[in-house]
Image (cartoon, rainbow, N blue to C red):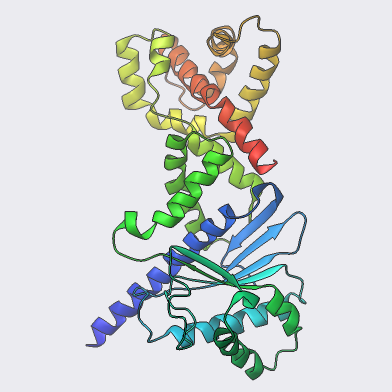
Length: 344
């Protein structure tokens, strides 16, 4: 019995962490991205902290249940979350724009009335938008605390957010998060199939951020989106540059990791894009600009590639350099879209 109890707690804890960093990803993508400055999962003050260029931060307390329909711990979760937000407001000297209790619990406030208030994939209600029965539940928590803050300001800027997040099947559990991320990336100009690929990478980055001591800046988020959107499996390059079958097989088999890593080297990517933009201004035709740029300039970049793998030479080095440059430049429009969409 003891072992089973420990396993259950461990599973619940893992589920809670899963919800927390996915909620962070969801809420970051829910903001006006051009106004974001940075964010942190498992911050110094709250579970999730989102900072802006033009207003005070948002602080979010996350609570989740593996069984979102269970009522066993709902009231305790509510009390703990609200008290945490109260303390957060006090600790930041009331410098905040919003506080949010984010949860997957289907009935996050049990008031014996309006049981369907939070029914739906996403329900996001201000304190003032709650029925009186639900406000009273929150007021009871406010009345019990001795923390000296402006509770009227807190009430005016508090939200209860419930999103659907449960099940052992990933497609089911993450469907709302996935839809939010893909749609938002698509809105800023990333092709949908690339946004689908970027989603899983971003999930992992937000998961990792919870264990790191640094904030994730909007500039860094932009870099990640750009780098992960580069299509490492594009076969077009081998046709465009008439790469021999033997070299193509070798590049795909022996150098795929090197190609990906160099394509994700942000400083190198920026250097290539800068030179390409200059070249484009003097190009008479746009149709073959990428091909012409690579054919005329790949020699400049051979040394960079050679430094990564000093025993490759000849035509294979030439073709490797061309493949890397093509992958970067084929994502040129994505880079501009992301930079504009995130104002970086």
